[in-house]
Image 1 (cartoon, rainbow over the protein chains, first blue to last red):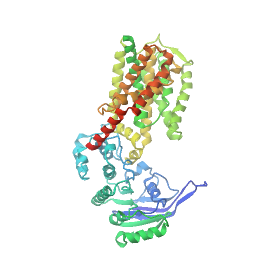
Image 2 (cartoon, each protein chain N blue to C red):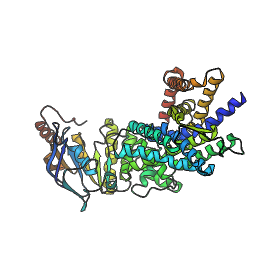
Image 3 (cartoon, rainbow over the protein chains, first blue to last red):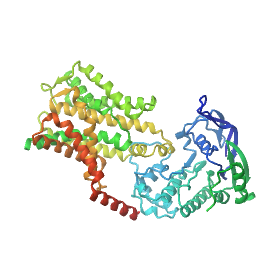
Image 4 (spheres, helix red, strand yellow):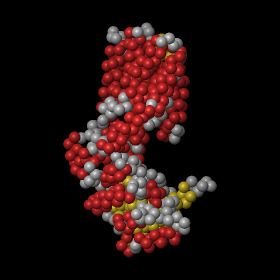
Length: 258
Length: 292
């Protein structure tokens, strides 16, 4: 369970470019649920994720994850609790390393990295088994450098690597936005499978209303740093959601579901 | 001609240690570390200082590596702690090292002919082959360790390193110190080889380092099996050899710097313009993608 209380964040404070994103913002994410976050560009979705994962620091506010106050932890220290998949498929992998090397690195996540050899031959079968669950044939390409994989393959690998140590919270930051519709659907299905079987608390930013309704248990809509809608996904239809969104955002419209 | 070949092999081997060092920053970390211009003579002057105070050649050489790595610590501090851009941090370090080098022995040129050197009693080439091989093997082993892989990943994608729970700056520090240590080692080897340490010996040295990497990559680009270290060594040898041939053809040694730069330009433009190469590279990419 994640809870954020009295969050405030202003960019460029004290300058002519001052931009207040959050003012006394509160949010509570239930354990084991997938919460979809919707909102126009600039509404604070990514800032929220950046604050949760420690990339940027808030001015005020307390973040607690499963009872632990994580306020003072740095980005790399929060990594042991929080997994994150980015929009860019290359952001979650090391492109010039092979699949095996990438998986071996994430297998050591948040343990002590030493001068021992990274590749452990005894673990290769286990890794193959894990890769087989993705159903993309990656298990037979262990020695392929990740930069030669397609966006969908890379993103699936990122997802796997982000969830390998069973994080307490998974942040999905428009993780299918850079993929074509078919691949995007495949990755979404894999995502659902992973978070359901491992029961991971998840927050998912999306611009795709259909995905939000279909894959989340709860939908939150943000506008100018405030929650303007908070419903169970069964209680609202795609159309209603789009209407609320459009009424709030004047000209801009949410990407129509494919 | 034989002396020419031998000399260029020997100098090429000395510069291959430099090239391996530059590979760590420029290629692995993607950090344009210009401090090399100061670190190379720093290694030479450190060696001169140590050997003239009566320390053995082997220990002096090893200490040059150790103290040389501190230049990496300085660049790291400027770049990461004081948030000065990488390029400028390196230049600032090199500038400071210029003064330090002069201060170290109180003069800009120190003759070492009357002192012992690592090469005493052997052909320099034998000692150098052994040394370069040792550096290469140790480096290859290091890059296969957990820390070594994190060094590569830091250059590739810092976000990933942080998401693995690690502080990526730590690996930049390791890379910079290792790189500068190797460059200083190369400088110490050069000082003993030529019999003197001189303040201008670092000028344009970064071009030699980068050129070796580029030559190694251009000639052997399709060979995935070759490790980065092997590429740097082969690149340094070929590069030095081309320069030696130019001198042998009648160009004055004072022309060498311009020749060095022209070799780099030739190899880089070969990469850009060669139609056959470009097509083959494209085909190769298609094949590689198809295989996946």
